[in-house]
Length: 229
Ligand code: CA
Image 1 (cartoon, protein in one colour):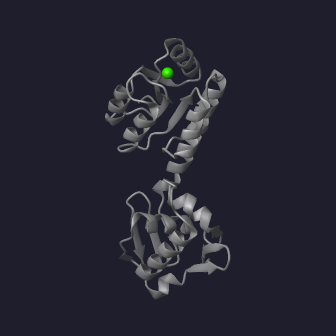
Image 2 (tube, rainbow, N blue to C red):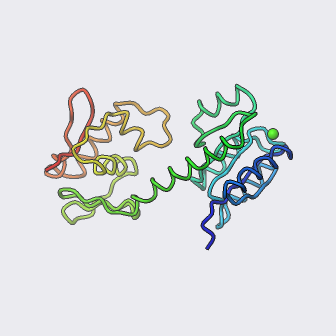
Image 3 (tube, rainbow, N blue to C red):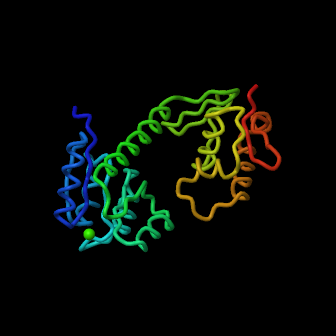
């Protein structure tokens, strides 16, 4: 099978699309182009979806923000926005649309390739450990099957509780600040406060039962950590 990364380029300006295609192909990426947002949305729903999307914000049919939102309903594919105006950049950064990065026009094709390589590295490092079970103390957490065993018994958690515990288990003994846990467990960001984290830790402890709950220690004024022994 072809192990190259395939990039969907969504850009309605043909000269720019050609520059991008040339840069990516030279950089070892496979490239597919479209100039319409609706086509990009449909393309990302197919089984052979692209590995990443380069998405121009200003498109003739659906704007890039809407395209991103639609894609995100079905897919976590990395999206790199191309913006041409400062207000677009503000929206990309401020709205937390689930884009992975952005470049402002005019951009250097080399920079674009470098950004995509960085995204590829991030994806590779975030998926590799995900297949391994995390075992510590009474816990056995399987990120791939989203399953938690405590002393051999399965315990059902919400997605956020699961991800909180996953973060703590990934690095026992390490103290996680509340904002650090927020980054790990709430990819959407948004209106989550330190109190939200505390509330989730509380319900997580309750579900784990008194004995297992003791493994999650509160570090006063900072956050939480998983006991080492
Ligand atoms: Ca455009």
